[in-house]
Length: 121
Image (cartoon, rainbow, N blue to C red; front, side, top):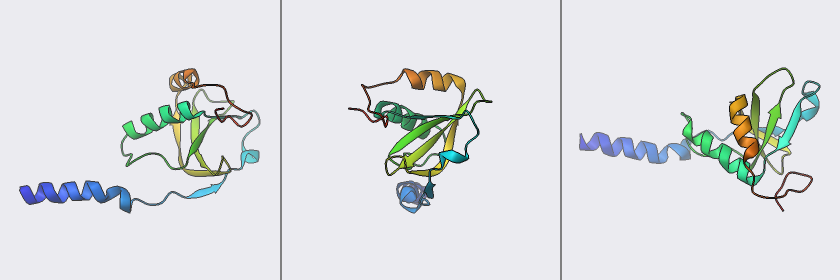
């Protein structure tokens, strides 16, 4: 029993090290349907999303990238959150699909004024 517990603990500790590196591709907003709204998340909103991301299995750690964009499609009530890197030039991993209620809470989260790129001042 002790050996099984040690093996399980070692596996869980090493799991992030062996996780696949997320694929990042150029973020091409031009291919989105007409009326799609892109909102760059503030650092406070990103931390809120990261908390939700790690709470939903099978998350192994924080989402890829160092930023995120809320992508709202005109025909849907929900949205996707695209995780980005390189100041939003690349999109990484699989988007997180969120519903209308999550979006309401997300848009209430803020930590201060932002510049034209959505970055906090």
